Image (cartoon, rainbow, N blue to C red; front, side, top):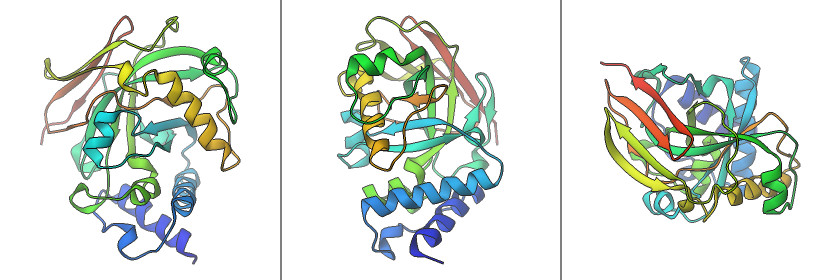
Amino acid sequence: MSVIEKCAEIVDGAALGAFEIPQLTQSADITLEQAYAVQKASVERRFARGETLLGVKMGFTSRAKAIQMGVDDLIYGKLTTGMFVEDGGAINLSDYVHPRCEPELAFLLNKPLEGKVGMMEAYAAVEAVAPAIEIIDSRYEKFKFSLIDVVADNSSSSGFVLGNWRTKPEDPSNLGMILSFDGRPVQIGSTAAVMGNPVRSLVAAARMLATVGERLEAGQVVMTGGATAAEALSAGISVTAELEGLGRVGFRVEPD
């Protein structure tokens, strides 16, 4: 078994079994390019179990999130059917290791995007938008990792919740966001925190995927990245995210 396949087996097993693992970089000397190869191989293991690809999530697109995680590069991960949580649905903490959540703006594409595209071209490919919540979960011990580690771990992709799809606004660059636990605001932010405009996150997704011979496809969802720092989840709470002019989305965490 190659180093890539071995690393993929480790991170996929940790995600599937919800247990901690040491950082890959403590025992494997891999590059960022190889980390994305590990990510691809681990996602292919999901496909082998019957999951299908739904889209892409972007990470570290806001300064707050980058500071919180101690990294400074954009990253991406893949979203699959096994990660989808229904709006109003419930999750169980036993399925996660270090679960946290963050409010986001999601895009639904109506045409492919590939390579170096401009912002106007990218936004023209957006069919609709929705308020969303991403559930992130690093499988690494003590929630500590390098950029290479997190990329290999599918960029901490674990779950995502989508609200109702709405007609896209003319300008999505400064929409207010509120993340609440049990009706109490815990994070307040704006889409402006996502690279100044979340469309830039979409542009970056198309560019980054092209470097590995992939593209964004019509019908796919793009999670543009957290507009605030992520909040740790605890048992028994109700989580909601409200996005200015676009409604709200939420889920419940089952009690112990």
